[in-house]
Length: 119
Image (cartoon, rainbow, N blue to C red):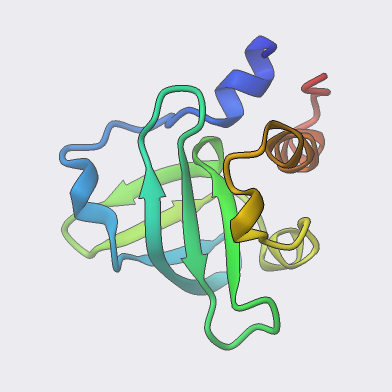
């Protein structure tokens, strides 16, 4: 796994207690997208699954590298992507959650938005 790809699957922000973010609201740059359904803190594959509820996809998988801030006081996770960027991401496939090719596809998508090529 390349350095940019590894960074995409690592938290850029400190987690006081990783169990604390379940149920937090998730805010894109331009609005709320849902709530944290579950998350992973496994090294090299950190991510959050967001239940969007009102969107047609219903759940999205976000690499931890897109998280820009965690506000524990207000129980909000901020991501540095827009609602449209998240809507246009590859569809969440729970059965592929741990599949390296699927994670590579997601990492490539979000990495391309950040201006680098994770491959």
